[in-house]
Image 1 (cartoon, rainbow, N blue to C red):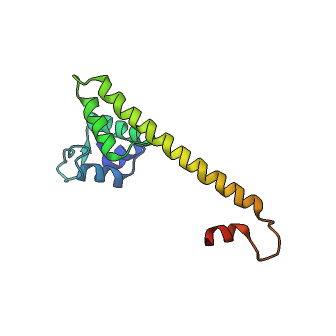
Image 2 (image 1 turned 45 degrees about the vertical axis):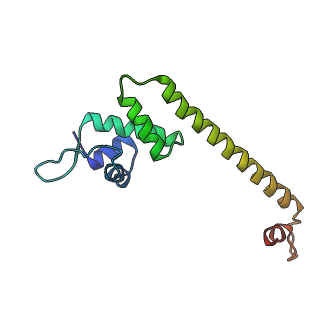
Image 3 (image 1 turned 45 degrees about the horizontal axis):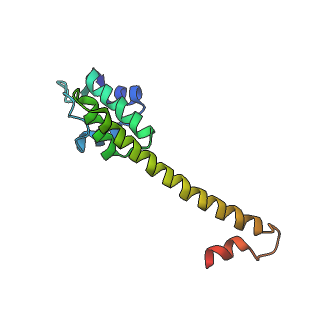
Amino acid sequence: MLSISQAAKETGLSVKSIRHYEEIGLISSPPRGENDYRYYPEDLIKQLHFIKGTKDAGFNLKESKALLQLCENKTRSSADVKVIALQKIDELQARIEQQQVLLDKLKKITQQCHGNAESSCPIIDSFAK
């Protein structure tokens, strides 16, 4: 069993995040030692690794919880997992498209700016509209 700081180091999560996950019920409360410190057994470390993986893949905590529940359900349907992943793909694709529009707009107004000593600036003007 690992202490919370060891669990954080092992999983790449912060101590604050691990405590938050416990508070919101994403993970179960770890057992406590005689000193009242939390100690994380292997099953909780695996859950934390899983949550870190979903977090790194762009899933929010609600989605991570759903995936974790499916992970722990040995009678799960892979179709249920795929639905969540496909929804995330659609969401990420929409965000990428929105970001591309913003990038293109910023490039366009930046190209219009002469970047000289004059105070006139198309970039400022475009934000002031």
